[in-house]
Image (cartoon, rainbow over all chains, first blue to last red; front, top):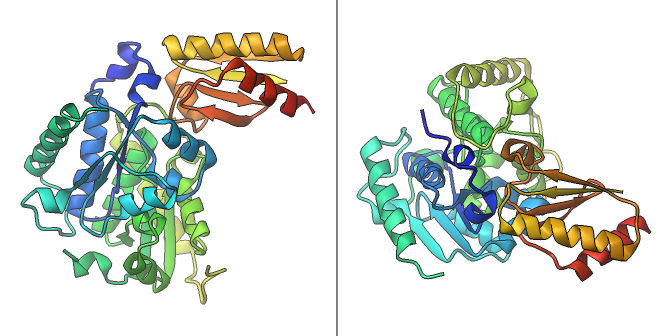
Length: 134
Length: 135
Length: 80
């Protein structure tokens, strides 16, 4: 079971929300790698996995929140770039952006993601975030 | 690199909200399970959000649009409606009595409940003859 | 008027609550101030970031701390 670190440590949601993570969560293996690493980054305390659909749905509270963040992280499964386009549609630009199929040697397919690919993508983005100067 | 499998039209398209909490994860998992069970095909909501032509066009060709939202905010339904699509089947995870919490812990029984609810509604729903309010 | 201050307890959340209290005094409005610090209750309202300020059910500020003057304007607008 994943540790509910945020709640058990009494950690504030404000701090996590300074970095918002937007995965495309698409229907392919690479889209689901994007989804899963966003989730794991949140659990590792590296940011707040956000509701990308809230941006596309033009939900005011979610859009306003995204505009208040210090750093937006976009993760697209493939080069179609849906999550990035969604953010740009609201005038939002990710400071860190990753396309899974470009960065990993993973062929996009209509299957569940492999754990080793998820782990590789997670480590890649985590080190990129650590190296990013806000 | 374009993958034609994902971009080909399918008759019943399923859009989970995939939001940042347990109920978003449940919606996401349920969509994948429904796809594996051949009840429909999970599609890329982000492509609707980003106004991506290939995703919009393949959605126009579907006979039924199924939306699984995590909570009452209903981001996925709003996204599709904003793009001019009518939603044929809509299930809200919290509407099935599953509590939304700031966590990704997921009970597989909850996923199965969502899968069952969506499956029943897909069976009970007649295909649309025409799109509603295409934008 | 009901003012909800959403935050899980850090310095930002506390500052928001202080600013709200000062603004209520300055604006001279009658208001019930409710502090919500439970993460699950916060996200249950559809709020994914804190601190957050809701006045009479309307989201006024998400993920930031508005100053006292800005909150006074919000309160006067809400009570008009």
